[in-house]
Image (cartoon, rainbow, N blue to C red; front, side, top):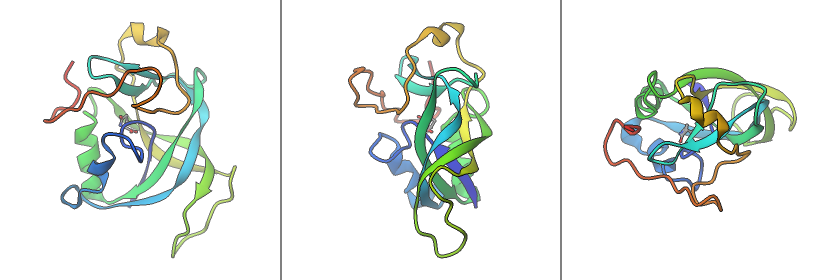
Length: 159
Ligand code: PCA
């Protein structure tokens, strides 16, 4: 199992959450909520209004999201779905735990403790995206009005 931190359309209540729980894509288990230990610019960009975490540590906000454990099949699905490596790259990052779900096995980190997981960041962003407003917590249905445009077929991030 691999830990993945999601901050965008894969979060609970967001448009692609269901994909992580489609058993034909693999298996997923919720682990907890967290925020990135470092700041990153989280912007909404492109014709599909997609959230992108620009790989520029130290700028923007500590970004809030959810940690899931996924099996190899789901990890492969997510990598393909996120357009790795052209659109996003899967990178490891340190996270500050907010709340941890009770697990049968393994320890329960205290709120505020640091853990690690993979997340989808991008270095292949357009230069002008660095001037977009940054968000602390993504919500496709938020006041910004930039609702994510559903992609019905892969690749999801054709510009
Ligand atoms: N999906 C991934 C990266 C951005 C997106 O919309 C996520 O939710 O973390």
